[in-house]
Structure formats: structure tokens, C-alpha cells
Image (cartoon, rainbow, N blue to C red; front, side, top):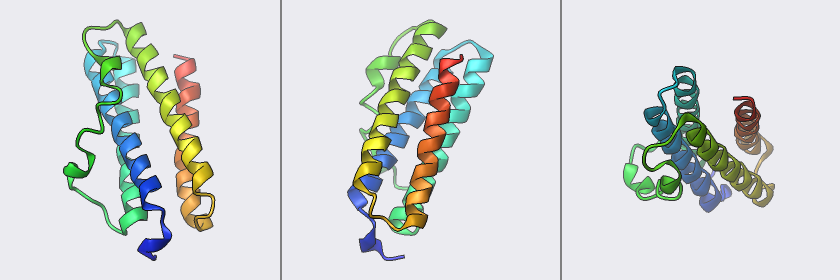
Amino acid sequence: MQHSTIPDKNIQFLINANYQRMMSYEQAAFLTSEESFKDFYNARADESEANIHQLYLLMNGQESTDSRQLQGSDATFAHLLHGKKTAVKILASIKTIEATILKWYKNTLAEIRDLPKHLLAIIEAQYRLLTNTRMQLEHL
């Protein structure tokens, strides 16, 4: 795979979006006392971590363990999960975060339509996972 054929800034943006999503779900799992919600939140954090690994492979052909590339990228949603919150407020915050990340993915997909189909398929699959999660959140 040629490194120059991948729009690095778009892939890096999705890496950062997934990092923010992962950190938000981990924080939600930490804050909630509802075990079923905690399990759901932890599973979504794991899903975002897997997305990050896939995206690094797309961008670099290898995974990165350099957390400095993601420093400060968790600040975007920090205010939504700050302090003591009820399970209902945590869920509302997570719904807001998920809707925002889904919108970011949709916008990024529109910008990278010229990627080779096999690469675009990976990002579209991640978008479908996010869409599925949003539907699941509506039923919690």
C-alpha cells in the first residue's frame, strides 16, 4: 500500500474521533453504577480501540503505540461527562457524543470517496457500527 494514496489528515481525524469516543465510553463506564450500562459502555470503548488500530494500519501500514499523537484529543467531550451524573444523564451525554462522532464519520466519508474501494470499505464498516450503536442507544 502506498502511504501517499491515503488522505492522512482524514484518517488521523477518525483516529482522534475514535480516541475521544473510547475515552468517553470509558468515563461513562466508570461513572455509572448500572452493570448492564457499564458492560455496554466498555464494549463500545473496546470497539473504538479496535477502530483506532484498523485506522493506523490504513494510514501507516502499522499500528502506533505513540500516545503523544493523541494527547489533548479527549478534551472535546470532557465537559459532557464531568462530575456526578445519574445513569440517565450519562446516557444522554453518550447519545450526544455518539451523534457527533457519527456526523464526523459521515462528513469524512464524503471527503474520502476517492480511496480505493477495499480501504473505503473498512471505514464504511466502522460507520455502520456507529450507526448500529446509535440505534442501540435509542433503546436503552
